[in-house]
Length: 262
Image (cartoon, rainbow, N blue to C red; front, side, top):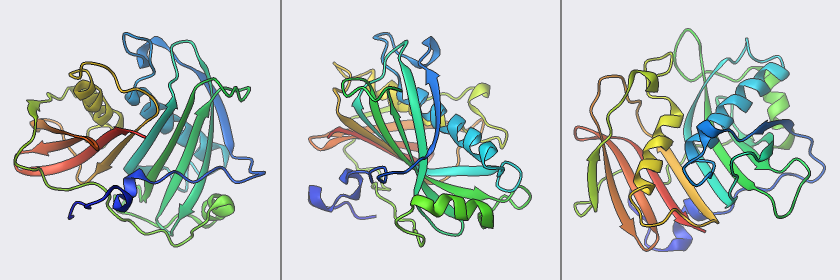
């Protein structure tokens, strides 16, 4: 993918769609615990990723789709940290679909204070999820009842995939480092779990003099799975427009992440 030449051409900088007026999305609550925060008590990005996985599972169960559409893989996740969440915060998570097609959907989750505190935490997320057949392991049609449910607030029912981030590593990266994988990083398919990619982003952020100041956006696009035993390398480039991280195994790129203030 050719890298755009101006900020206005970069789709990953566009605002996320708002919650439709009067909508009643699936909602749940949780408290930020010690396992999901950094040494400054900030809710880490990998913690946000786990919350998104959990509410997705809970949402499927709540609409009786856990048997018909049990498996989903994420192709892209966008996290806008507008006001960071911290240790001890009680969060309300609201989940709805803003666009979909027959085999995939773009799903929004908003994390904020249960009482709607205008000064409290606010994290907006968007994720492109693909429905996977449990026996074929390939993209499959979303079941009719679930499609009807998800389409309630969708502005697009013919959603198409479009990659956002540059899928080639430039020659002049600023840092290259190995990122050893652990047995606990793997999911039931033998692939690295989505949240682990965000562990790597947090590792890159830890090398910066200061953590990113809100508001900021982080994006990850998954190109190919990473399996157990593979030697993963992170290649990072810092530009005025943001930080880009390429997840590489040998000469192949498996994922790309980008982070910048917004």
